[in-house]
Image 1 (cartoon, rainbow, N blue to C red):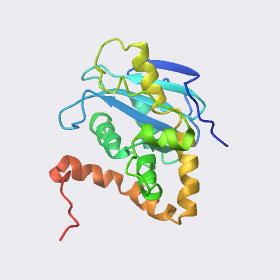
Image 2: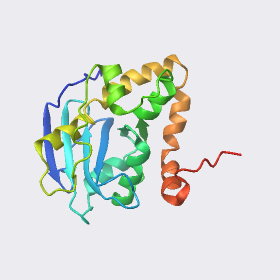
Image 3: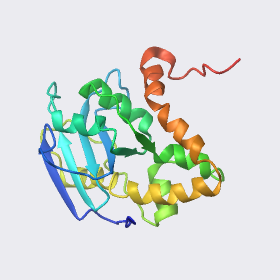
Length: 212
Protein backbone atom coordinates (compact mmCIF):
# COMPACT_ATOMS: atom_id res chain seq x y z
CA UNK A 1 0.00 0.00 0.00
CA UNK A 2 1.37 3.39 -1.00
CA UNK A 3 0.64 6.24 1.40
CA UNK A 4 -0.22 9.67 0.05
CA UNK A 5 1.31 12.82 1.54
CA UNK A 6 -1.37 15.27 2.71
CA UNK A 7 -1.31 19.02 3.18
CA UNK A 8 -4.18 18.73 5.66
CA UNK A 9 -6.04 15.88 7.40
CA UNK A 10 -9.25 14.66 5.83
CA UNK A 11 -10.90 14.26 9.24
CA UNK A 12 -10.11 14.76 12.92
CA UNK A 13 -11.87 12.65 15.54
CA UNK A 14 -11.52 13.82 19.15
CA UNK A 15 -11.99 11.24 21.93
CA UNK A 16 -11.97 11.74 25.69
CA UNK A 17 -9.79 9.44 27.77
CA UNK A 18 -9.38 6.54 25.34
CA UNK A 19 -9.86 5.29 21.80
CA UNK A 20 -13.28 3.79 21.02
CA UNK A 21 -13.47 0.00 21.18
CA UNK A 22 -13.07 -1.87 17.91
CA UNK A 23 -11.10 0.84 16.11
CA UNK A 24 -8.43 -0.71 13.84
CA UNK A 25 -5.35 0.99 12.43
CA UNK A 26 -4.06 -1.96 10.43
CA UNK A 27 -0.45 -3.14 10.50
CA UNK A 28 1.04 0.24 11.43
CA UNK A 29 -0.10 3.36 13.25
CA UNK A 30 1.47 6.80 13.36
CA UNK A 31 1.61 8.17 16.90
CA UNK A 32 2.56 11.44 18.58
CA UNK A 33 1.93 13.03 21.95
CA UNK A 34 1.37 16.52 23.26
CA UNK A 35 2.51 17.27 26.79
CA UNK A 36 2.56 20.23 29.13
CA UNK A 37 6.32 20.48 28.62
CA UNK A 38 9.31 18.43 27.52
CA UNK A 39 10.43 17.09 30.89
CA UNK A 40 8.91 13.60 31.35
CA UNK A 41 9.74 13.67 35.06
CA UNK A 42 7.67 16.84 35.50
CA UNK A 43 5.21 17.35 32.66
CA UNK A 44 2.05 15.38 32.06
CA UNK A 45 0.58 13.71 29.00
CA UNK A 46 -2.27 15.79 27.57
CA UNK A 47 -3.03 14.39 24.12
CA UNK A 48 -2.13 11.34 22.03
CA UNK A 49 -2.81 11.49 18.31
CA UNK A 50 -2.92 8.53 15.95
CA UNK A 51 -3.41 7.86 12.25
CA UNK A 52 -3.38 4.84 9.98
CA UNK A 53 -2.01 6.94 7.13
CA UNK A 54 -5.41 7.47 5.49
CA UNK A 55 -5.63 11.16 6.39
CA UNK A 56 -7.89 10.57 9.40
CA UNK A 57 -6.47 11.54 12.78
CA UNK A 58 -7.81 10.24 16.09
CA UNK A 59 -6.94 12.43 19.06
CA UNK A 60 -7.27 11.19 22.63
CA UNK A 61 -7.47 13.99 25.20
CA UNK A 62 -6.56 13.15 28.80
CA UNK A 63 -7.80 14.89 31.94
CA UNK A 64 -5.24 15.28 34.71
CA UNK A 65 -4.85 12.07 36.71
CA UNK A 66 -7.15 10.05 34.46
CA UNK A 67 -5.07 7.68 32.36
CA UNK A 68 -7.07 4.47 32.32
CA UNK A 69 -7.10 3.92 28.56
CA UNK A 70 -7.34 0.16 27.95
CA UNK A 71 -7.96 0.40 24.20
CA UNK A 72 -5.06 2.75 23.52
CA UNK A 73 -2.81 0.78 25.86
CA UNK A 74 -3.63 -2.49 24.10
CA UNK A 75 -2.82 -0.93 20.73
CA UNK A 76 0.54 0.37 21.98
CA UNK A 77 1.43 -3.09 23.31
CA UNK A 78 0.22 -5.01 20.24
CA UNK A 79 3.27 -6.79 18.72
CA UNK A 80 1.49 -7.01 15.38
CA UNK A 81 1.18 -3.23 14.93
CA UNK A 82 4.24 -1.08 14.24
CA UNK A 83 4.09 2.28 16.00
CA UNK A 84 5.61 5.08 13.88
CA UNK A 85 6.91 8.14 15.73
CA UNK A 86 9.09 11.14 15.02
CA UNK A 87 11.49 11.39 17.98
CA UNK A 88 10.19 8.22 19.58
CA UNK A 89 12.76 8.62 22.36
CA UNK A 90 10.42 11.08 24.08
CA UNK A 91 7.06 9.57 23.21
CA UNK A 92 7.82 6.03 24.39
CA UNK A 93 8.90 7.44 27.76
CA UNK A 94 5.83 9.63 28.27
CA UNK A 95 3.41 6.89 27.18
CA UNK A 96 5.08 4.33 29.42
CA UNK A 97 4.98 6.69 32.38
CA UNK A 98 1.28 7.54 32.07
CA UNK A 99 -0.19 4.41 30.47
CA UNK A 100 2.18 1.87 32.01
CA UNK A 101 2.93 0.23 28.67
CA UNK A 102 6.19 -0.68 26.92
CA UNK A 103 5.70 0.13 23.27
CA UNK A 104 6.85 -2.42 20.70
CA UNK A 105 7.59 -2.56 17.83
CA UNK A 106 8.67 1.02 17.16
CA UNK A 107 9.81 2.93 14.08
CA UNK A 108 11.30 6.42 14.46
CA UNK A 109 11.42 8.68 11.40
CA UNK A 110 13.89 11.00 13.14
CA UNK A 111 16.40 8.20 13.72
CA UNK A 112 15.91 7.02 10.14
CA UNK A 113 16.50 10.59 8.93
CA UNK A 114 19.71 10.89 10.93
CA UNK A 115 20.98 7.63 9.47
CA UNK A 116 20.36 8.50 5.82
CA UNK A 117 20.10 12.31 5.55
CA UNK A 118 23.71 12.76 6.63
CA UNK A 119 24.04 15.73 4.27
CA UNK A 120 22.11 17.95 6.70
CA UNK A 121 21.86 18.73 10.40
CA UNK A 122 18.11 19.43 10.17
CA UNK A 123 16.08 16.41 11.24
CA UNK A 124 13.01 18.01 12.81
CA UNK A 125 9.65 16.89 11.47
CA UNK A 126 9.14 20.23 9.73
CA UNK A 127 12.41 19.94 7.78
CA UNK A 128 12.08 16.25 6.91
CA UNK A 129 8.48 16.67 5.74
CA UNK A 130 9.37 19.68 3.62
CA UNK A 131 12.25 17.94 1.85
CA UNK A 132 10.85 14.45 1.37
CA UNK A 133 7.15 15.23 0.87
CA UNK A 134 7.10 18.85 -0.25
CA UNK A 135 4.71 19.83 2.54
CA UNK A 136 5.23 22.84 4.80
CA UNK A 137 4.16 22.23 8.41
CA UNK A 138 3.11 25.05 10.69
CA UNK A 139 4.63 24.97 14.17
CA UNK A 140 2.66 27.91 15.58
CA UNK A 141 0.80 25.75 18.11
CA UNK A 142 3.88 23.83 19.30
CA UNK A 143 4.12 25.93 22.45
CA UNK A 144 0.50 26.19 23.51
CA UNK A 145 -1.55 25.05 26.49
CA UNK A 146 -2.25 21.41 25.70
CA UNK A 147 -3.74 20.90 29.17
CA UNK A 148 -6.64 23.25 28.40
CA UNK A 149 -10.08 21.72 28.93
CA UNK A 150 -11.11 22.71 25.40
CA UNK A 151 -8.57 22.52 22.57
CA UNK A 152 -8.77 25.07 19.79
CA UNK A 153 -9.29 24.18 16.16
CA UNK A 154 -5.73 25.29 15.41
CA UNK A 155 -4.41 22.96 18.12
CA UNK A 156 -6.36 20.02 16.71
CA UNK A 157 -5.07 20.69 13.18
CA UNK A 158 -1.50 21.05 14.43
CA UNK A 159 -1.67 17.77 16.36
CA UNK A 160 -3.18 15.97 13.39
CA UNK A 161 -0.53 17.17 10.95
CA UNK A 162 2.17 15.69 13.18
CA UNK A 163 0.93 12.16 12.37
CA UNK A 164 -0.98 12.10 9.08
CA UNK A 165 2.22 12.03 6.98
CA UNK A 166 4.40 9.72 9.07
CA UNK A 167 3.49 6.67 6.97
CA UNK A 168 4.49 8.49 3.78
CA UNK A 169 7.72 9.65 5.44
CA UNK A 170 8.49 6.08 6.50
CA UNK A 171 8.07 4.93 2.90
CA UNK A 172 10.56 7.50 1.62
CA UNK A 173 13.04 6.87 4.43
CA UNK A 174 12.84 3.09 4.01
CA UNK A 175 13.88 3.48 0.37
CA UNK A 176 16.90 5.51 1.48
CA UNK A 177 17.77 3.08 4.29
CA UNK A 178 17.76 0.15 1.86
CA UNK A 179 19.76 2.12 -0.69
CA UNK A 180 22.45 2.94 1.89
CA UNK A 181 22.40 -0.58 3.44
CA UNK A 182 21.41 0.83 6.83
CA UNK A 183 18.03 -0.80 7.43
CA UNK A 184 19.43 -3.39 9.86
CA UNK A 185 21.26 -0.65 11.77
CA UNK A 186 18.07 1.40 11.94
CA UNK A 187 16.10 -1.55 13.27
CA UNK A 188 18.68 -2.11 16.00
CA UNK A 189 18.29 1.54 17.01
CA UNK A 190 14.50 1.23 17.08
CA UNK A 191 14.74 -1.90 19.23
CA UNK A 192 16.93 0.00 21.72
CA UNK A 193 14.49 2.87 22.24
CA UNK A 194 12.77 1.47 25.33
CA UNK A 195 16.16 1.00 27.00
CA UNK A 196 17.13 4.51 25.91
CA UNK A 197 14.00 5.75 27.65
CA UNK A 198 14.98 3.99 30.87
CA UNK A 199 18.37 5.68 30.72
CA UNK A 200 16.73 9.08 30.17
CA UNK A 201 14.41 8.78 33.15
CA UNK A 202 17.05 7.08 35.30
CA UNK A 203 19.47 10.00 35.19
CA UNK A 204 21.63 9.21 32.16
CA UNK A 205 19.79 11.42 29.67
CA UNK A 206 22.78 13.65 28.93
CA UNK A 207 25.50 11.12 29.70
CA UNK A 208 27.27 9.09 27.00
CA UNK A 209 27.67 5.78 28.81
CA UNK A 210 29.74 4.48 25.88
CA UNK A 211 32.38 7.17 26.26
CA UNK A 212 35.84 6.31 27.58
